Length: 564
Image 1: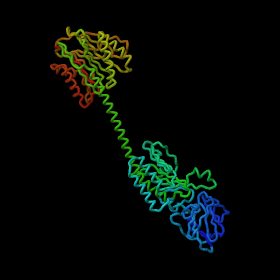
Image 2: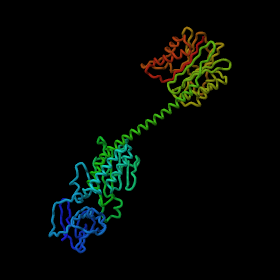
Image 3: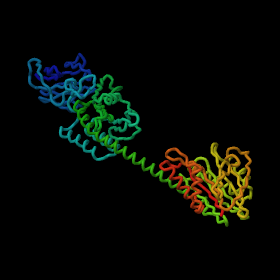
Image 4: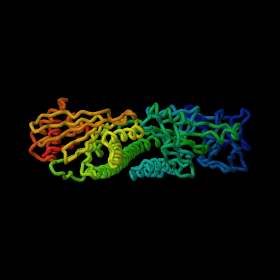
């Protein structure tokens, strides 16, 4: 009598005789051959005879009947030794007559769907499922073809250092290795937050999509893989009673493995899903994915390091270009401002007059000017805007414009300061002020009429004695109702008038000592035989030497008048 040898896993193989007419196989207790296993349909398949021949037929089961690993779609002739799978339960058809059931220990190599996975699970791999799964390979083709597919994935990883291309090569290659794949995802740990972020995804029949903004990690299986550093095989078995509602929405099986870097650090995870009930993922598939992910992790980390280097290089180039443009603009601003200073020294008989400004940045808040008047007199201005740099330089230009405009109207020095103060109080931001010394020199009488808004001057006689020319009122731009006053100074042969900004006498040494007014005036006395222009240069150099390695943070400006 023909029979079928059913593989019962750990219980071995049991032989069941077949009826000459029809044998119904399924989970229903009324079946001729009962297989009480979730995933086997209630009426799964039948084996029947026509004359001396036997056939197998699938009864529309949800998980399928297989003959020699090919799914049965119509009644198919059986030959002696054929292997039949009722979903995951295997049997061998025998034409030989057996007198009674026999149990023997055997296993069919390569496709053993009824063996518990715990019996053959390597120690470094964790698998989760509610029932038994195949331990063989679900991939089609020979072992050689399988190996070639894996090697193709590995070789592709060395072709690019572009992260998106590497991730795409990984998923595209894995879809070749596992043709039953429906969806593949790669998550990478975010450098800033340490949270896994979906970086690449692929659907069957579509290109791999790579981006750093696909979305956060959602699958708990991938969470477990990253947290536990273990690969996971998950199988969801579907009953035919719910096929219309469950089969279309639940994934049948998935494999997920961690991505590890060159130093065994966790980079993320790779997950591949399949809803192909004919070829659910197996232990062998998971082992292949684990092996590929080890190499993929190395390639991914090298690509990420390369990307970081590129990003840093781009940021550096952008910042360098930004600074270059800023320096270029500041250089232009400095050049423009330099044109606003007097182009030379005034040539007035009986007097040696010079001025110079030494900015500490690209832009100077100090101001000096020589304004010849129509009657032969000379207006002289020295000022200092609080702060330094480009902002102070802009206020300096504004102040210069007001002074020139009111001096050109022929106003007295005290009236010029009063009007300029009113304008600056309306224009300048709170907390910004200007010190200013404004004088008019009459060469015929050697008389100097002056007014000062918080800006001092120093008068040295021929013997080197000095007297401070004190300010006559407040600095500019504090109060708009200030009325400024003027005073007169009679100059004599051998006299010198020094009009500095505080950047000179407030320069500080490395020992926090001030250059001071006394050192400044002594430097002028020592160089009094030189021209006014030379004295200013000597004074500026002395100031720099005194500061030494301590940088001078304020602009240095001075006007010097020698009476011959």
